Image 1 (cartoon, rainbow, N blue to C red):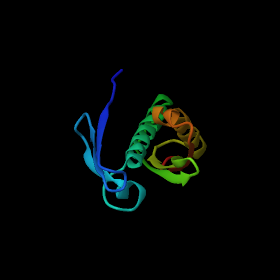
Image 2 (cartoon, one colour):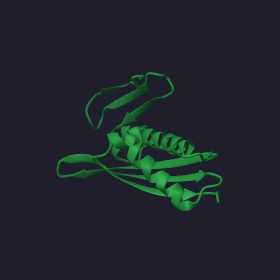
Image 3 (cartoon, helix red, strand yellow):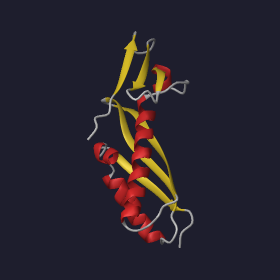
Amino acid sequence: MPIRSAQARWTGSLKDGSGSMKLASGAYEGKYSFGSRFEENPGANPEELIAAAHAGCFSMALSAGLGRAGFSPESVETKAKVHLEKGDAGFSITRIELSTEAVVPEIDEATFLEHANGAKANCPVSRALAAVEISLDARLVGGA
């Protein structure tokens, strides 16, 4: 199986410094700072990349599970919200909210939800982030 990689560089102090992150594939390169990570300033941040990875992984896992069960999903669109909060031990990712909408012909809602919950539990990114609370709001758009 392939090994995926990325790199980051940070220069300067925590509050006044700046950094950049780059995927080895070249598909993404962006700048980040204290302000883009812990405040609402423009720029990227590691938690945003985790959210993108989780949304992408979950969407593929749900589509794959539905396909193995004989369904043909037309689309799966997922948003992920990664919550970064400051606690006694410092900053931590405390929870992730997945919200997905799927168009899957000829499936009932109970079967769809079963597959969505299975994808949440079993996609590789969910398993890697298992120490964090992960919630799921799954909606079927179209179907039986």
